[in-house]
Amino acid sequence: MSAVNRKITMDGNRTYMGVHHSSEHNPFNLGSDLMEPFRPFVDYWLYDHKNIKEFTPDIKYGLVELLSLRIIYNGDRMILGNAINQYVHDCLRYLDGNLFEMDIELGVDYEVPVGG
Image (cartoon, rainbow, N blue to C red; front, side, top):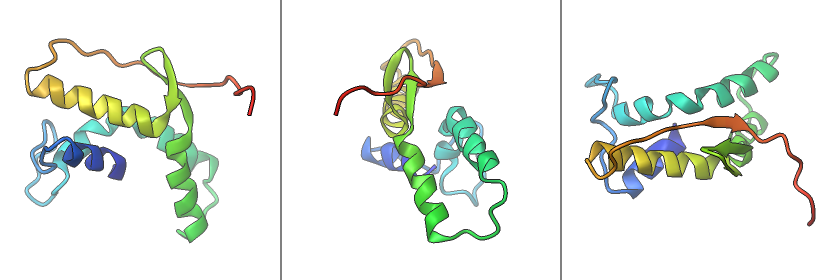
C-alpha cells in the first residue's frame, strides 16, 4: 500500500478521498481502493511464509523485495513496483476523465531472464 500511496502523491493527488473506502479515520482511502488488484501477490508471499512468528527486519526486507517480483502487466513484463506505478497513474487519469477505458491483466512472469 505504501507504493500505491507514494505514486498517488507523486502524481499530485490526495490519498484520503477514496472510491469505495471512505472512512474518515483512514488517511489512505484511495490507496486502499487502488491496491486491491495487487493484494494476491502479497497474500501469496504471506502464505508462503505462514510460519512467521515475528515481524523482524528480514521479514520487512522480504516484503519490500516483493516490489522487485517480475510480473506481466497488460502483456508487458516488468517488476511489480513499475506495474503499480503504471496502474495508479492510469487509474488517476481515468478518475480525472483523461482516460476513457481501462483494462488490467496481471500475472506472474515465470520466464527466467537470460544474460547478465
